[in-house]
Amino acid sequence: MPNNELGDFQTPDELAAACLRVLRLPEDARILEPTCGRGSFLKAAASLSPCSERIGVEIQDDHARHAPTWGSVRVGSIFNMRLAGDLPWTSSGDLFVVGNPPWVTSAELNRLGSSNLPRKENFKGARGLDALLGSANFDVCEYIILKALSELQAEPLTLGMLCKTQVARNVIEYAASAGWPVASSAAYRIDAKKWFNAGVDACWFTVALDRLSPRSYVTAVYDDVFAPDAAPTSRFGVVGGLMVSDVDRYSHVRAADGKCPYEWRSGLKHDASDVFELVAAPMPTTRQGIRLDLEENYVFPFLKSTDVFRGRHSDLARWVVVPQRSFGEDTASLKHRAPNVWSYLSANAAELDGRKSSIYRNRPRFSVFGHGPYTYAPYKVAVSGLHKTPIFRLVTPIADLPVVLDDTCYFLPFDDPTEALMVTATLNSPECVDLIESLVFWDSKRPLTKRLLARIDLDRLPFDRGSALRVASDNSKSLGLPFDQNRAEGLAGGFRREPAGALF
Image (cartoon, rainbow, N blue to C red; front, side, top):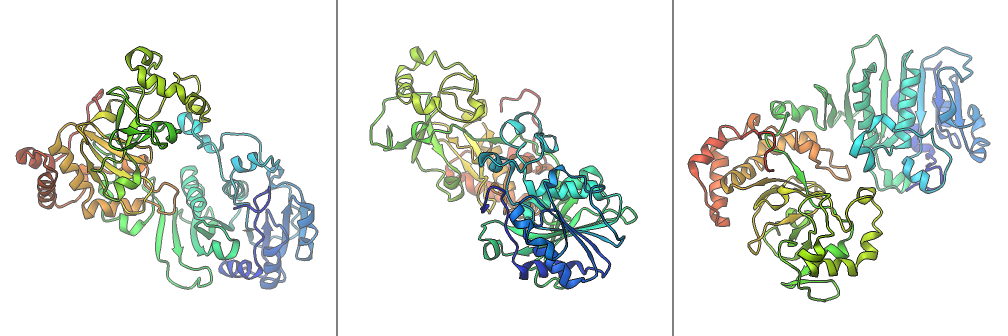
């Protein structure tokens, strides 16, 4: 997506002008463009507000030579500047911070060897496993927006930035947690493919800070920056300390936004599909057509998120090798307990030992991740984390073996088929779908997350109990599962809360 090592897109004049029209710039405005490039926004500001004072900051000399036509340009890195004190303003009009910061992450810049980065830090304080798996990586555009809002909030200001919609959400969520004086905000959709040939959901994001106004962390969403006077189509933002995608839809099911009575699990992660995933022919067979004779208890039916979403959750299409019962368990004993499995893994040691994820460092050889006793539960209520419709499937044993799900799935494990049937029916209820739809952001790379699913309080969900009982009973017949009507009715009145140390 980025077109050079700094990850910048030069903004077309037509788009820059449309964005600034939304702000209704006063004649005496002070306008700062922190990463001005060739000065598209300075140029638009000069046209819309000729008497405004305009300052740009740009690190690239070639770009900076073009921008002074439209304002004063300072050559240097925005990361090394104090925005509240280093800019030589000569007027005192309302402050506007505008532009199009780089749409690139710190990790992408590091891979490209760019020096255009702030100092090394765990941005926004990611800790533990989240930091290890990549949450400490940050979006440079987001960093610049937060830097501007943080350093300039002592006075009223209006910020307008082109950014990915995900960045806009992150900024509002962070502003709410930090208690910043956000008076209003809006996101005007743009066609990023048309303007920048970028396949992302993007917007013109505006934020007004004013310490004298009531604080609001709800952002109005408009369909088109070229039609700013149209009514907003939805609102996202922080309600009661929690981020929601549709504030108005959320209001009807807000009571169920709490804590799920069960713990959601994610599926198996192995990072070596050519080795661990085998074709069901029906015996375990490599992709090269070699049939394998592997010991029981180490090979299980395997489903991916697309299988779950498409309703192929009863089909035996793949096997997966699981060399440990839980993460971190010793594997050296496989030489004696399962010599065929050990021989097969050893024959593929080069690929397995070369896995790059740090999660495998200093772990037993041939380790996999994301499994435990819950992996082997006979019944699993599963959902795809990648697809844009929340469909929950009851996964039952295949070939008399528990099914293992991959790491793009989330699931709840059960021993009791009646409980699994009732939970499946409840999660697929219209009321639960409403709650999910009001929380999820479908433009995310992985829309459904474990964190989001953990917010579904089934006991406070205003679903139709009678309908859920009928659906669960009908499903039990189609799946050939036993169904205890009395137990089901009890569950409809309240699902269990897991005791500490529960098996799953």
